[in-house]
Image 1 (cartoon, rainbow, N blue to C red):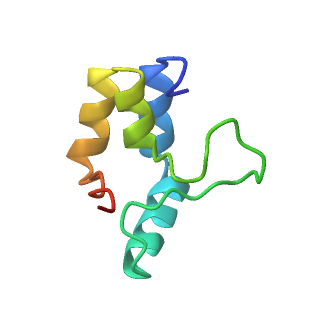
Image 2: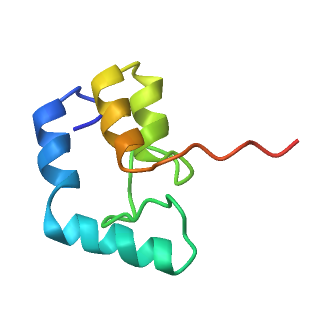
Image 3: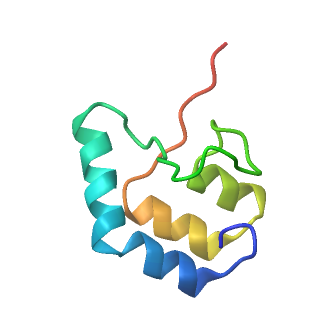
Length: 78
């Protein structure tokens, strides 16, 4: 949905109770903004978070959705 710019679908997904519960569980486990995948095969590398993907596609509205949920981009290793 992010790569297609489907803002309404992204909003529905990130506001779904199951997504929110998984996100909370990851944060409690120390996963920060780690993204959990349901499929092992993905067209994007595992280090690409939803926020980074939205930034890659320059989708300001979706970026704002993730920032409002306290997602961050980790500082790259030197």
